Image (cartoon, rainbow, N blue to C red; front, side, top):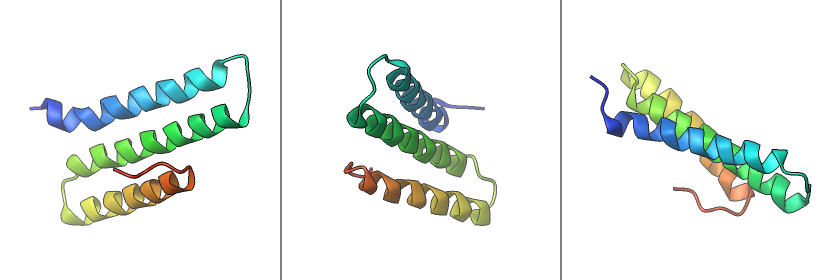
Length: 84
């Protein structure tokens, strides 16, 4: 059975991805908009890794997904955003 807690990271990733795409499709292009879009894409990737960690079946795969999540969180620091 799938519960809300296991699906929340994927909903978060979809929202972050939609914001990133929406910002890129706007007519005005600037460094701030590109940075926002890149940061939202990184947050989406981090949320996907968190969701895949929750659905992992073995401890080894959980560690693998957590390592990818840590990499995405470290990229958030590059955009000046605090990691979760």
